[in-house]
Image 1: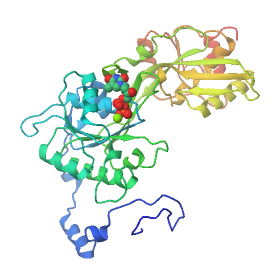
Image 2: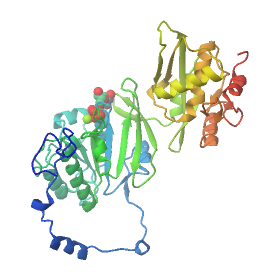
Image 3: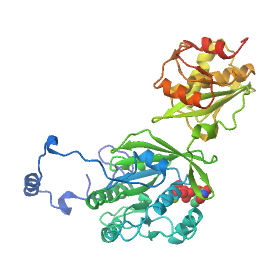
Image 4: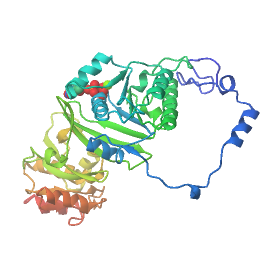
Length: 431
Ligand code: TYD
Ligand code: MG
């Protein structure tokens, strides 16, 4: 605690770690009398006395978006949509805004789009691309208290705040975008959402560090965290739930960024495998995202290296995992990979973090190294252990049935191969 801003914390000695807060002492009077009063007023409730009720939800009319939220936006919830700049957050939320219109005399306007970053003119340009001659209520304002007053007055069915980093309250002296301002603004919006039963969605940019003034400080304050991910060069975008107080996490929605905004991808597996050819270095895996199996192609290219330390480059997979798998392949299958450059890529610009993709990564590398395609119509699911053994993974049946649906006839998994060696024997002759 310090009454004024200090660049360096006198206690821990670190720079730039002090965060401005509203003083309880000078601000609202934090004395014993006050505390006693609040205890008297608050009520202790037994949960058995509470009647269970379904959370009322508002549908966005975008099926993928609703599913990620667990069936629509819960009224009175504060939802954070985070993601890198330029990934499409404003586009997706504008689409959402245009889909939710006025809901009767209590809220005569449709969604209220609070724009702190862009002018109404820019919002119009974007909205017109999505839906020509669209109608949308825009508020160009950054003072969170003014915004709260407007929301209280007009009672929109949904509020979108783009972005939280531009909001500020005059009760704090620090600049907009600082940790203190971002946190305080989010707190005020959270209270307002609960009081008025209005869902509020806020956009949060991921800063380079990922922590300072970024969504990380916000995650505790909000009810739901959605993150929009994707490779900027690819048109696919994944909307993922990482926190949800009203539904499942780990759910994903897949979109394609097109001229007219984000288009839902209803059958992702089919699209991701559309261009797959049975060439050396290609292996297909069934990943599981939330409850949904998605088939992806993993490609590997193994070539003779001209460098003293050959390269291992993974795009869409963890590089450390790749190093480990290459070491297992060298040791357990005696593959002379020590002088080979190895590149592994997940097609479609997607990321795979599941160990279930280990086997497909290994098979793609082996196939490229031997320059032989893997058995046609086969799919690979399994974690690879350090001893070269295949380890079981969750929901194998679900993944296998999705693969069968898409015409894969051979599923290689811990169910029919106990080790990498056995898996290789099943799909690569004469190795
Ligand atoms: P934007 O939603 O502004 O990203 P964010 O709010 O996350 O920073 O959109 C980023 C990119 O999307 C921008 O370069 C233009 C492109 N875009 C489309 O491809 N199609 C569209 O319909 C729109 C509105 C934008
Ligand atoms: Mg934006």
